[in-house]
Amino acid sequence: MSKKLDYWLINRIAKISPHKMLYDQLQARGRTTILSAITFSALLIVVYIFSTERIVMSAIKDGQLTSPMRREEEEVSHEVFHKEPQISLIPPYHVSELERIKWFRRLLPEFKTLESDKLTMESHSRILEFFNKECEVRFFMTWISPAESFGSREFLTLDSLFKVHPRGCLTILSRTLDSTNGYRILKPLLDRNFKVTAVTPDLSFLLKNTPAESWFKELKGGKKDPGEIPLPQNLSNLIRLAVLYKYGGVYLDTDFIVLKSFAGLRNSIGAQSTDTVSKKWSRLNNAVLVFDMNHPLVWKFMEEFASTFNGNKWGHNGPYLVSRVAEKLEGRPGYNFTVLPPLAFYPVNWKRIGGLFKRPENQEGSRWVRAKLLRLSGKTYGVHLWNKQSSRFSIEEGSVMSGLIATHCIICEYKYSS
Image (cartoon, one colour):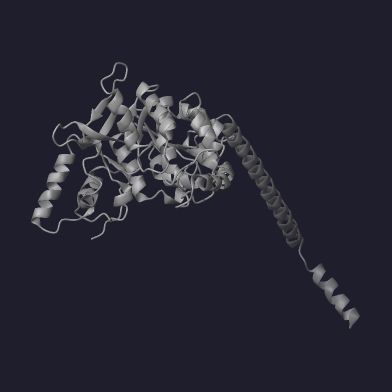
């Protein structure tokens, strides 16, 4: 049996043609060539990725952070620095000042907004580089909450801002938005080439050589009572003053819909209310501030903040502060500023803001909506939406808000209730 098998194998091998053998050799050589090509291509890809990573890291090191493409790479590489722990900054109620200070000291290591680090040290150069672009108007906002809570209402402020100011520049001072999540939020605007960026602020740098420097040092050292009002609210009150004094421009809250260009405004603040008899302003608000760099009134605002800080009274360090200081200095030489009427920024009282969100139920209601839209199309630069009150209202189709959005948005992806 074994001899027969050997004879059969020899006979089969003898019958293989030279052409078949040559074909098999070429096929084997082809497989080797393909394998070599694949290996070479893989090496090229590895070299390309390594080179690209070195270029990106070099750009980050050199502070070239304003291009959307570089920005995406930069924020991914810096994400570990940008992420703000979601800690509760709502102080305990019905406790003594000493107990509240002890509570705040325990939170300090986790509250990264107060810290100065490698990332915050870049803030000044990043802002200067960003404003190196042609900016029709320089805008600033602050955001100390988590990036995830920056919702459609807040985005509406940005959307309407760039609808009215397509050549404007917006810097959002925020550690949480200066991140991967923040980049995704701003991407619809960046994709349309609007000039918007989020920068982690260096508060020590912003407040250096200002009246609030020592106040901030005490707070950062755990020696200052933050009060019962959540600290981010009062920090925002101070940051807006410091950034305007340092760079000049427009500060705007994130609960606005912008209707008219701010380009013609200088050294202005809006009245929230006026006296019914004298027609003189009775209260100002700090939700919109328009001031030149190094303006003496802004310096006085910071001085008042540091010397009279009270974290237990709502508005004391914000609207009431600017009202107190402006009342003392209005008309005095060297403090030139303009107080705009309520129609400019606060045409609707916070108690009545819900009316802008509701659809008309009859012809009379429809006439009211048309009349309100007509009135707001004149001397109103923007409508403060009083988010603390209006956030619970849905935007109803046919309402004043739906009408304003329809003519003052670019992205325009907002849901309406029927």
